[in-house]
Amino acid sequence: MSTFKAPKGTYDLLPPDSAKFLAVREAIAAPLRGSGYGYIETPGFENVELFARGVGESTDIVTKEMYAFETKGGDRLALRPEGTASVLRAALEANLHKAGNLPVKLWYSGSYYRYERPQKGRYRHFSQVGAEAIGAEDPALDAELIILADQAYRSLGLRNFRILLNSLGDKECRPVYREALQTFLRGLDLDEDTLRRAEINPLRVLDDKRESVQKQLGGAPLLRDYLCDACKAYHEEVRELVTAAGVVFEDDPKLVRGLDYYTRTTFEFVHDGLGSQSAVGGGGRYDGLSEMIGGPALPSVGWALGVDRTVLALEAEGVELELPATTSVFAVPLGDEARRVLFAKVTELRKNGVAADFAFGGKGLKAAMKAANRSGARYALVLGERDIEQGVVQLKDMESGEQTAVGMNEIVAELESRLG
Ligand code: AMP
Image 1: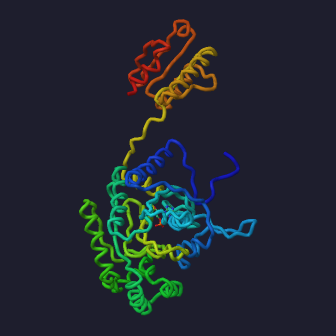
Image 2: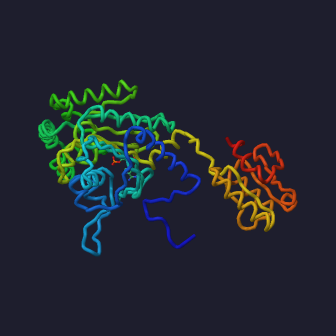
Image 3: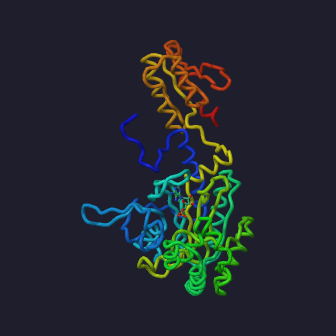
């Protein structure tokens, strides 16, 4: 072991488990790629103000969890705690919204950083795949994103997840509700911190997980009773479109999310096998965010799904992903001449798209066959001096144990045909 360990709240992805993470990222991205979303990559850090303004000054993410630092040049930066603000910043900076084709639909995949108290499913470095549809107010777009996330989870074989759906209203109706909620909260027996939060962002008090708070919230006014007609109609259409797609959801009138920028549609994907960190993904509409970061009015909607928690959810359900075999053919040379000949064959196989590996390090037959077994390869190619003289190579089927001599010049075609 080295003197160093992975920093607190982080972990390394190592083979063979790391293959699951790749498969999850791929499965989440696939429906997006097939639905007009283009790939975007932004830096791992941004001006700290982008998050302060974009995510919200009063959120835990900004006040407690951000990795903020000053560079040698005096810039105040922060490791990105989430993706939406950066993606919108990049789209605005490149004027993607002016190209005349709204919505701009983008997807991304990457690392995010929050200085949280680590526990199972909650890390300081984690991984998300996200999607944003920028510049259109259309309930079909909200529905599309919910349906695509559902499709992604189902394609992985996940079953025990639930979709929670709510509307947070807009700048017309939310302030009225906010007042009503504040009045209600002021009458409760709450600690100093929570009372302060009630003044800055009362909706987030609804999200307080503590029993002592939750039991006082029974009679709290609900946003759904305050929605203006436009928000009500919008929400109803989202619900209808999602339902028509056969996607089941639950109305959750208390669902608010930990970021300030959400308006109207808000949703969360929760998995019941994960204990307290049950949210595997979430998102919603953020019609005001562009203006908050200095852009024009660009109503938008998006989500981010957590890769780490999705992997945990698969494990909780006992889903075994069908991972592609990493190595199909494992080559075992016996002697120096065989090493040169077989190494060339392995290169040729790889060029022809056959995943092949090689017994490196001058191993003897026994150790090399052990390595072949461990590699999971379907076939082994064994080459000895006598084979070279005869112009053949021994092709061993690792499942049946059957071994046949195949002409050196035919072996690539033979393997290609056997492997389909
Ligand atoms: P949020 O932006 O907080 O809604 O996060 C979206 C998704 O990212 C969550 O549903 C989680 O799956 C994942 N996520 C957020 N924070 C963490 C964390 N600290 N550790 C692991 N996954 C996280």
